[in-house]
Image 1 (cartoon, rainbow over the protein chains, first blue to last red):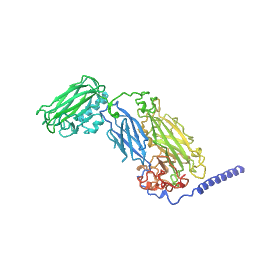
Image 2: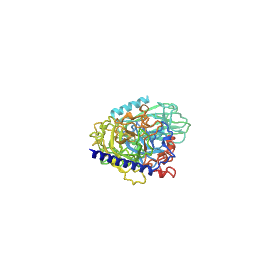
Image 3: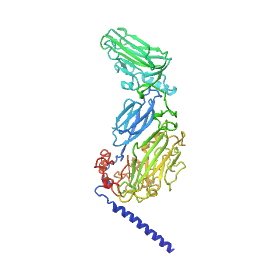
Image 4: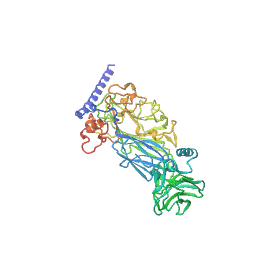
Length: 133
Length: 476
């Protein structure tokens, strides 16, 4: 019994040494820069902490167009990356969301041979196959 | 009355299939709208002063010169079937010249011959401001355009107005392809309705598109794991890269999701777990999940989602970060170990058959709204989410408003402190996280400005733009 107790205590001591050694190592290798402190920042309650923006896209179809008119709608970033694509009937309404980096200022919509470019001035884009805004 | 006609047409379309007439009453009031829907208008303008009916008609320019070719209108291509009547209304607004006339012809898409449908020479003075209703039987079949030509000579401000056009046929133009006649899809090998050249899976009728989130590069979730108490804000206690590929079919339903989760750093003494949730996705819509790590301590259903989350499919990526990463990857002088990817595959449809919870529309999935979370040191109820992201059903809500946390569900505030600080950040790209114990505000020199401006200043704070954005000595 005593032997068991002794072994348990010895094991615990070894664990303590390992833990304190690794903590010390982390502390000594990386002394924190004390000049700035996130906890002192003044943050608005409404700030969302996001580095991206969600855009609500609302498409109004041209109702008189045949349902046979359909094509792939591509939404591209200013760098040309495809952010979203799906197949849409031109006479139907759709809503969906897509996300761009906060730094993005515009997107380009491509539908068949038609191309539309919109400035991202709000979180909502409306598209009716004539204009996008 | 015009609006009523449109409603009746739409109802007829819904009940009988697409309307077999092509109409134009010009009530959109926008020439641009009609040209975008393949009405060609040359020399004409919209007019809402004394229209023939409703609020708007279309009107020619003055027909005071010699015969003019500039006053023309053409309909979209229409598929005619030698049945029904072509109807429209016209009106001459003044007649001071010598002659004024209107001619309507059909032209087809295969040769240059035209068919005269209607012609009228206005009579002075009786026809001035008289609305003339036209109804002409159509006796030809094929793909045709209706062409109006308005002409005249002499006089002053003599114009012709048109309205209430109805052509007995099916709309057959493709506005997305320069208004050319509509073509059947020529190459659609899998017959899913998406042409091969637009289909990411041209030979698979169950799949059509790949969408990626983020669209380029990988995103990063960076955690502080001392919640509900503050930590040191080095944002490296758990650093996860992520990238989703969402595969959908031609009906906008999600077929499968490939979720690549990359364990990049583990700067914590606590042995944390990681998972994510798809809000509003019924757990029973998931058929199966593969590729996750060890899930010891969690109860997982046979379809791979976590038990206990009734309305939102929840996935556990791994139970203990230290099980997969033997080093911190946060201390510069300690050798790094490779990042650990988890290639998770989530199946929603099997040969077009969804899970028992029903098909998931790509909008319902809304992949950008995924809800990642850290589970602190194997304590299942101690979850950490992005600021204002909701806890799962498994979270221990008694921890809210303890320590530094100021979660208040009633106002939609989650996982933020009383001073609105978070315990996790989602960076829309690959993020070079701070080294151990280095506050992110010191490592990223514009982070504080970004925060205190509510995101309007330095939205690219995490990039390495120029030489003044970060202190490299404080970044791992």
